[in-house]
Structure formats: C-alpha cells, structure tokens
Length: 463
Image (cartoon, rainbow, N blue to C red; front, side, top):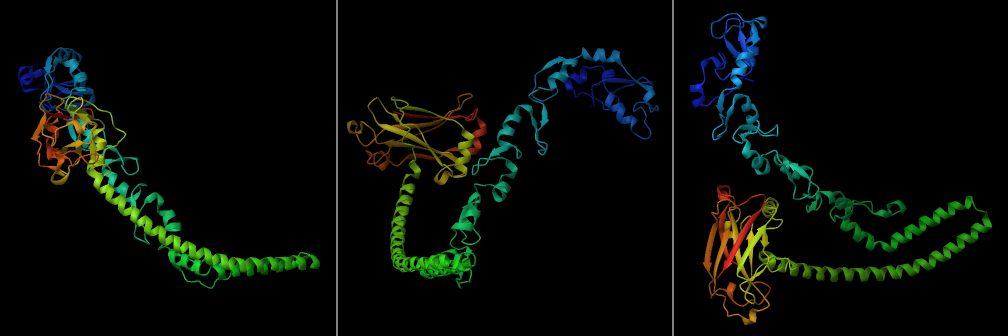
C-alpha cells in the first residue's frame, strides 16, 4: 500500500527524511535506493514495473538489485507520535499502533460490505447504512416472507414471489402466484374446457368456458347417463367372447333389467336434484352477497380504530401512557405496504376510576399526512366507570415522540373540544379519534434518536 496519510500538523513536525520521495506521504515499509533515497515498498514495486525505472528524486536508474529494506529507518518510524488523519478522530499514538487503530477507527472511510454497492462512508455509519440505506441489503418480502436483496424486491414481486397477485389470463382476476395454476386448471369460470363425456359419445365437441360447460353438464345430465350406460352395455357385450353363452345371457339380462330400473329412477331424481341445486345456488349467492357487503361496511368502519380486543392490559391509572413500539422497521414497512396501517396502544385511565383512553399511530401517515408524516391520534374508549364521569371529556392532551438521546422530544398538545363527537360519552367501543395527522415529518427522524435499536416510544399525558 502507498505511504501513510498525515494530518497537516504532523506533516509540519515530521523530519523530511521520513517522507516517501515518490508518493510524498509518510513512509510505509521503507526501502532505500543505492542513491540514498527512501521510498515506500509499494512505490518501489510500481516504479520497477515501468519500462525505464528511475529514482524520482535524482533520476538514477533503478533495479531490483539496487533497492533494499531500510530496517533502521523502520525502527525510527515506529517511535514517531502521530494523530489519526481521519477527520473528526482524536486518536494519538505511535506510528506502529496506527495501522491497528485504522482497522477500527469509527471515522475512517470504508466501502460497503456488499461488493455491488459503491458507497463509501464512515465506519460508524456502516451499521445504519446496512440496516436501512444500502440498495443491496437483505429485506424480508412482506408478501411471501422470503429474504430478498432490496434492489431486487420489485423484480422478485414481478417474477417469482409466491405471495404476489398475478392476473388470470382468462378471467382477468388477481390470484396469488402460488394458486394461479390450480385456479386456471380447476376454478376459473372463464377458462376453456371440454365435456368430460366426449369419450363415451357426447357430440358437444365445442370448447367452451368452464361455467358454460357446467351448465352443459347440468342440462345434459340424463343424456350423459344414457351414453354412459350404452357404453357399458357395448363393453359388456364384447365380454361375451370370453364368457360361456348361457351364463353370459343371464348376466346380460340381469344388467339390462337393473339398468332400466336405474335409468328411469335416475332421470326423475336427477331432474329434481338439478332444480334443488339451482334454487339453492341462487339463494346462497344472494345470502353471501349480503354478508359480503355487511363485512365490507364493518371493515371500513373499524379500520381507523383497529384494536385487538384481547389486548386489555391497562398500562396506567394516572393519565399517562408510555407506549413502547418494538420492531419499528417491520411495522413501518407493513404500513407502507398497507398490510397494517394503524397501531393502537394499550388502554390507560385518567385516574383509578376515571376515563378510559388510548392512542392510535399511523406509521405511514393518515389523511393529509399520508406518506410524509407520522399521524398520532387520541381516542376516548368505552370504560368501566364512564357513568361516574362528567361529560363531555374536557382535558388537555399532550402527545410526545421521545428522543432517546438528549431528551429533545417532539411534542404536540391540544385541548379537547367539548362540542366534538370525539369527546362525548362513548356509545360504541371507541369514539372517533382526534389528534394530529401531521405530527412528525419523516425527514426529521434522523435529526434525533427517535428510533434506537428498532424501538420508538410514544408518551401521552392527559391532565
């Protein structure tokens, strides 16, 4: 490697004899020429590779035989006190310790560990770069759970992700990639299909959509049974060549009698079953349509106040909530991908027998803050002691995103509006939330230690 980089202060103090005559930096593995000049070993090797190697100081011809290691100068170098040349580093020590320090210096510029990434950055920033910035870091696909290189996540989703929706080429509906083959082969009503009874004589040879084939199968049920019976009779007749005549005639007659009886019975029964299934299918379709609409309504009504009812642990009874949100990166990505857009805090009380409340955080924003801000809201909940409270709810609500470094917290406060439906006595599980859709801009997250070790803290004070 070339000579060691020096600070300006050290460069002024160090004797010129310790400076490489080729690279003008502090000697690294000093070599002396026959003409008495000192160069780094790597600088000498580079000069010897040229077609006409010469000493850069006096132009004397160089050869491998005219250069030798200068052990005395190396011993002198090892004792020289130096500063680390990396900007911002306060390390000072002997020259022989400098190389060891350089391997761990937090201020040293290093390359990203991923060979494809050309980024150079301080060693202290490498962890954050690998965690959330490097285009070649591994991330978990939210659709299938597979580890994928971040730069290739879209290609993965477009070409191979088993959990990604793909469009059926027949019905144009979106189906998960892992299910698309089964869907097109068995379930899709628009996929082409042929009558299964062609092998026994059905003359309906046209290729139809699967739902049309189903109708054909229903309409031609009796004809298909007749064709199947005729096919069996023909096959049984051919068996006569292998069974003695008297026994064969008896078998045939019994089969004919059984077939005639079954045929007339089946014709009536199949017609009745078809009618019943047609009527049942129509009624079920109407029923499920109503259920589906009801479910969509309930889902849209609860989306902004989603809260697992199993999570009923009361975190405090003094009007203060300290909410620890772990796995920040995963939850933030879930919000961006709209897997789960809102987080609801554990409930807390204004006093031991006071108002029941909670906080709601939208990790990718809500309303006018979507995509640019954290949106933080406060909600009054239906509690055990609401009959004992004075309504409407009239309190000052202070919402905080805590700085885990120097305590420079993000704070927003507001007073409840007694005219708002958000602060009346609850008639359902939770009132409509009220708060700040522009609570915290995403671009300010790196200004402070709001996120540390993949954890963030929200604090709510009600007084």
